[in-house]
Amino acid sequence: MRNTNFKQLKNKNVLITGGCGFIGSHLIEALLEHGANVKCLDNLSTGKFENIKEFYNNSSFEFIEGDIRDFDTCKKALQNFDYVSHQAALGSVPRSLKTPLITNGVNVTGFLNVIEAARLAKVKRFVFAASSSTYGDNAALPKIESEIGRPLSPYAVTKLINELYAEVYKQSFDFDSIGLRYFNVFGPRQDPNGAYAAVIPKFISSLLQGKSPVINGDGSFSRDYTYVDNVVEANLLALTTSNKRALNEIYNIAFGERTTLVELVNLLKERLLNYDSSLAKIKPEFGPERPGDVPHSLASIQKAINLLGYKPQCDISEGLTKAIDWYYENLKIET
Image 1 (cartoon, one colour):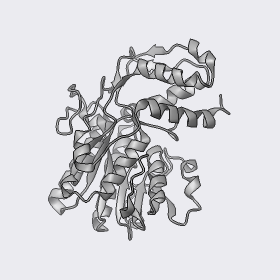
Image 2 (tube, one colour):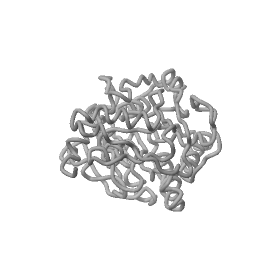
Image 3 (cartoon, helix red, strand yellow):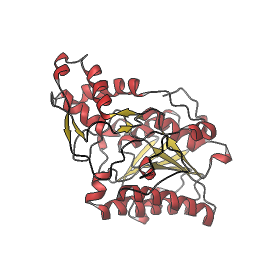
Image 4 (cartoon, helix red, strand yellow):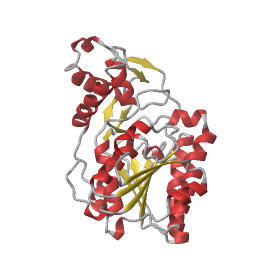
């Protein structure tokens, strides 16, 4: 991460929902480094306690096991807190197609509980994780915040509803927020296991085990893969910005380059050869396309640059190198 001085965060009370998850735990780490007092609210349904265990003895950190679908839990968690970073969600397009009611409960009811509790608590800044899935069937590239299409999955619907609720809360209650549309975030601590694992940790895990990574479709689908440090930087900027024009806006948070799935496999293999030369012979397998998948994704990040001062430093090449180092150390016992 850039050595940005977020001195405004020192001694501030910040609640992170979903803090035991991949992005949330990285955000907690950064906030503690900048002197904030951090409370993590998580029900551990997809997050892992091991992601926050290194913070547990820090006097500036508190963990509460609780579910954002319970309004009283949200109200209690937000007592005497200045800032909220709402990261809790049930991700994955395929999961939402299989369990739309659960996805809606967490992502819509849960979001409404958190933002309403934050409004009642009069928090100074509310930042929430939005999603590039909101662009739906809009095929235009790059993706521009003001131009979205029709959602292609229940998950995309829930994330769009979050944005609409944030807009209504400004209009109805004069409650300020900032939404960050993440584009395919990756990095250390992202879970490679399970049916709904993200593609980069899943591919890394397969290759480390000498198995062929399985690509959904012909491998031509492309994504704007974004290293987690860039996302953390964007969150800290959103939490601390003094630019009033930056409030009540939605921002693409990405690197601004796209990579196909075939190119991704090749990039991973190049880096993993440093650990095991036999991986050169592994070829990917190709399976059916996943329902609800968007073929291509590429973000325009100009709005975030202009209003938040966002300047992503870590491209996919550097990010994959960092991620692979972590996965090799943490997965080698299983391989």
